[in-house]
Length: 156
Image (tube, rainbow, N blue to C red; front, side, top):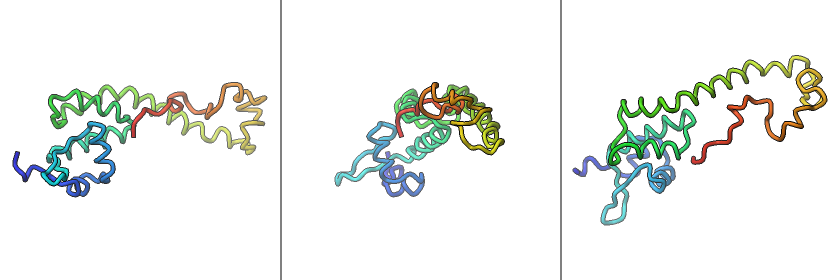
């Protein structure tokens, strides 16, 4: 590999928009790899930029790092994801996104329901929560659609 194909951590930061700390974290987590110079400085392949773009795209649609890692690990020998890889891998995430979109639409469409009467109290609202029945459903935001109440996927 030619040295022109290797980038410093500063160059990767500048080109990717990820901070130094994220790059070191992603390296520890096995999402990207770096070689070291004789002086111990990190050098990244230019293709690392594409892997980071893949991470950013997946994270922007709510995919956890564990799933991102699994997706990248499914590629042969640290190959850089291409358009076909993204298409194949993102299909698996489509149904989850559709579910989240439906839940957000329901949330959006229901936002004015509680404010309509002006009481602003889910504890004493006779229309949406008569007798504070929501308290029996457990803690947390019980009125949110279930798809929006799922625990977050682990990872940054």
